[in-house]
Image 1 (cartoon, rainbow, N blue to C red):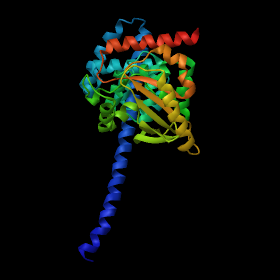
Image 2: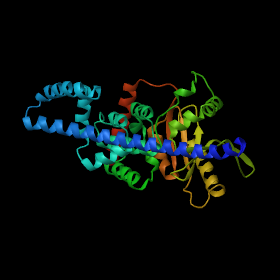
Image 3: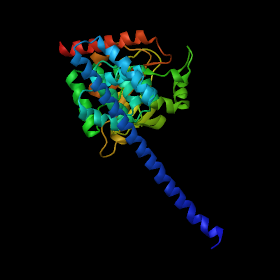
Length: 344
């Protein structure tokens, strides 16, 4: 047999075996990571029990210091004082072994390290489920936490039981609600826009940085069209940006506005949504959703117009990252106001 006849047979075989090896390596890496994270939880749990048994919280520091020195001598830097405290915190935050076992199979130790500093259980569960859903890298996961994604998502302004139900629904059935998808505000600092720009500049910049824009929107958004023309009674209208959301199973219209939200924007968006519902909807899809992105908005306008009944959402966008302390204060105020109104 000639070499020419032999190599075409070998190449596909080599490719197939290489894929098997790569898959096996990945499975081994996942298994090792899971076992390591589970070990860290057991270490943290045992240290915690020792401290509680002594009934002296001040001994905790001394125990960790001594144990770290002994373990580091035998096993290396993986058991530094800092890491042992992380393990202890991990066991405190997640006391149930069954939950930890599942988490360790789904998230890496580095992901878990990003979660354990979060104080609110609902916030932790939100980031865990969204990370599993969108398969965030550790870097992206930390960026989402740092950008206060939970506080920017509509779900944070809902009653506690609604948040619990939506997260359980996502966890158990892999179905997501719009309140877990849409955010306010959106960070568009990556567009590089200066102080003065037009709606066309904003749209053009989004298209240039479409990948980053979709990352900010969420991974399930798929771009469909820009300046989509629709004709109604011989009049032409243009939809700025049209997306499809895979898990919500619906079209999403994004209308870009430079200034403050105005009441007239509602009628314009309703026209777009009803046209899409009539002429573009297909069997099995949900009703289209409208997202009006504007530079600022007045909350009372939003409430009086009852936009939710029309499947319309309004959010601000920021072309420059704000001071995070200011943003945190503002978002927490918005959450408190929304929850106070729900309880009144």
